[in-house]
Length: 167
Image (cartoon, rainbow, N blue to C red):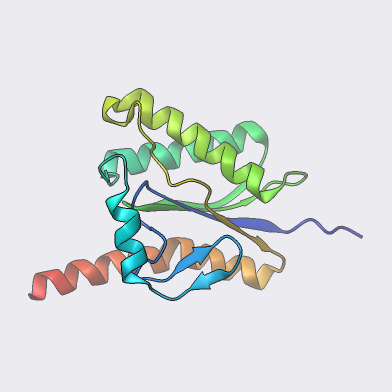
């Protein structure tokens, strides 16, 4: 019997953008999804050692290109890579690899590329420590996470821009 997942749905965030206590809900390592806790979020924000730098369009493209390059190099099947200003989603099949190892390799390679091309990221974190990965075990679930990582994220951006334009 093969217990390997069909794919991994990986998410990692830009340094300082999704803190514990976040109003959009947040993940505890031991307890999973947690309700917003504004005082906890502020406590973490006050302790950030570096300013928050969101990824611009050029940086987002570089991150996606590096994910594609790494997947080709490793022989992994990349279903979707979507770099946002404040987080990155990746859906990838990496047979024989643990999800945390895949996530960490992707983050490390993207960090290298960002630091090489943009010196303002030197000597500071690019990403939040860790990140999340979810095992995807069915074709239906794979379709859903690819949709979420791509179209749903893009739709959120368009909706936010339309809402801001109406103000």
